[in-house]
Image (tube, rainbow, N blue to C red; front, side, top):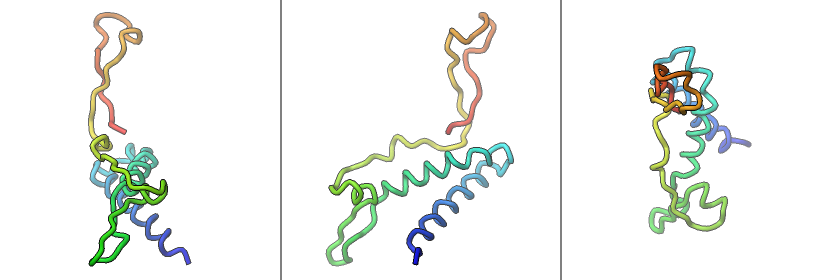
Length: 108
């Protein structure tokens, strides 16, 4: 049947639930589950697995299999999800000089 697909969904959902619990499990973070799920799916598709044998390993990621040729992808651009961050408010959106230049936010 669909064992491979079900396992993939289960893995991604487990990662998503774990990240939500790690973020504090607050109800305010639950609304961001699609962003977490997308991030974990992107990371999963870039991680390499052995498609060969132990004697002759062939390390490929699902993304490399999909595009049909080996290509190196970097995981450096991924950031920690749901952590606190500050966003610079453009001057055009500041009402006056006393308006804060930065706003507190959540990294998505």
